[in-house]
Each structure stands twice: as structure tokens, then as C-alpha cells.
Length: 40
Image (cartoon, rainbow, N blue to C red; front, side):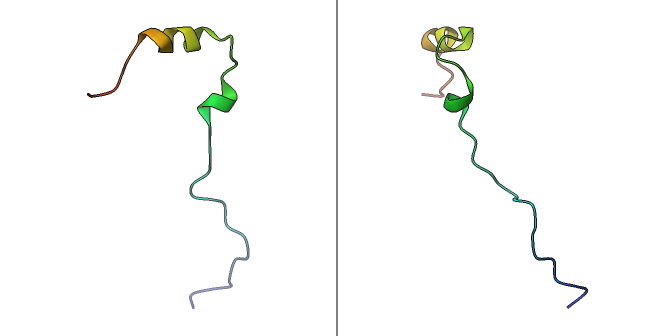
């Protein structure tokens, strides 16, 4: 072991939901309806 063991480490990955952060009446939601950014 190279040093004292740290009990808590910050999370490398975390959950984030864009759906939960953009209000239902936001302009981006109406733009999303018209724009398709998928590759297929």
C-alpha cells in the first residue's frame, strides 16, 4: 500500500437525466420535435 486508505472518493460517473432538467414548456423541447440527430 502506498499511503493511508481514503474512505470516500468522489464518484467518477454519476446519473444525469436531461429529461428531468428541461421543463416541459421549454423551447428546446419544441425544437427537438422537428430535429432528428440520429445517424439512421
